[in-house]
Image (cartoon, rainbow, N blue to C red; front, side):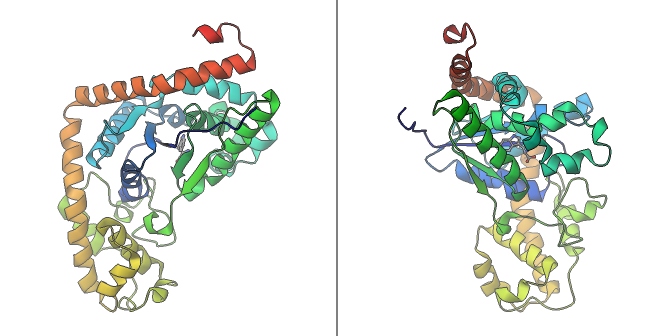
Length: 342
Ligand code: TRP
């Protein structure tokens, strides 16, 4: 069979698990919004079906899904340029995931480090969905024949599994149907670390609220958290190399660069050698200037839930229009009767 050729298509997913913070903004939302300007079609999904692999309070899940949608739009996502929707509205994800459950091997799934981390010591008590999580993720991507998937470093293994599933499916059925997707792994510049410990990722589950800047924080809170951010007593180094063994200093410089859309080199040329007492207020001003409008816009959108739901439902219609024919073709390949007329 001739090599299939695929339209460039970007897909990524984020879990609606609440408490959006600066790390989600710089590492995902802003990056995804920037990709809208490329030639590729961009599809972004709030993965509510993934979220329930661990217990979620229904009302909180609904709220977090809408808030994530508001976050996307406030960060600059344009529903005319990108497809934005929540996973459960497009049944094709779950349908293809079933097929992939029958392609992926137990041995592959057992090697997934995220399952081991999330299941912890009591793996017998983890949900079957948590174990199957990566097969659903492969379905999210491949039901659109997506060619590029921007994710964080921690998702690399899941993307390798996605490639393995695509290859095994193509091989077993003797087709060249699913593309071998390329991961687009985020660089250090957009990886945001905790404000209290430069060796840990900024996280919604860190017990200290001072460790992160939430997208719902107001200007005073943002400024306070930056003022209190952990640093060392030395002034900033004059060269980039001097940041290497200083994770907290490097994190603050990275955040500055990412918010200002500047390279770390260019930031260091400006601020190298300055004391933190001078640099922190600069960073606080920049962070407030960039983030306060986003939190205002999110709050405004959240007052009109009907509008958010309309955006998600229209996005789901557009997503389904791509996913449905790919699922039908998959069923046809697999030998399901009636697939051709769907
Ligand atoms: N597992 C991803 C995460 O936790 C979220 C996700 C689900 C995803 N489906 C996806 C990311 C498909 C990229 C593509 O970050």
